[in-house]
Length: 292
Image (cartoon, rainbow, N blue to C red; front, side, top):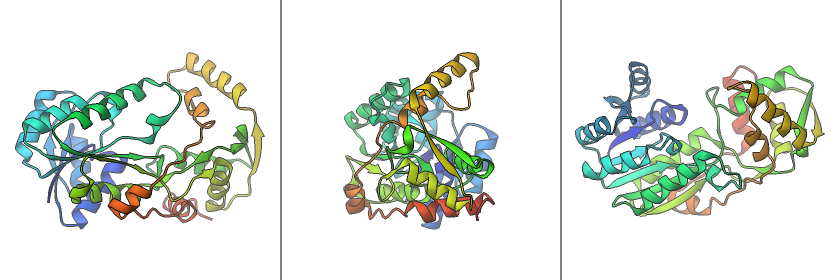
């Protein structure tokens, strides 16, 4: 199968490209810079020059690719959805897999939520045989932007504050399992015109996630419950003082939401079999050189 991938130079993209090459697919990947081209080439894909901010370039790249399936890993939160859909339709691409996020279900109202939901609506209204995957928080290698920071912090402190006591549910998913789901969706025609939540095998309280992470790096850490709202107020104050605070108020508020998702449909249609969190986070700790 001939795949055209957008977002191939990103965290998830590298895993999808490498797994697609192992499965024997011919893979082309959109690259906006020489660095991105080198990254996708090292993962086994052929770079195709194109910048999602330039709809003309995107249209030309999609026409030239002559692919069987479009795989869009680039974030739908940047507003590129309409240009990607239009380019795919003009290029005669029928089958397309889009990666969104379960973050669109938050009760909060960040700007990217509206953009992503609008993109999903446009995808579903298009002429494409689309599949939409919604992963939860992705982890698994030193390149992830969430649990890699947590593992590093747990190595440095014997006492760790837990906003709200860590009672709310989380369901992180390993990057290799998301990559497998993406390729299964691309390969299976019966997944067309369906959406799937892609998460870990079970939701767990945040405090359990913290304890498993501490065990992965071999640290005995005292987890101390702290009230959430003073931390939110402090984070908002930091946001007013610097454009790049260590943590944002929205991230803290998300800790007060349960993030639990049913994966039955993905198991049924995509043969989805995500790994448990404990071995997954131990593998990540080893990859980071932090394992017990």
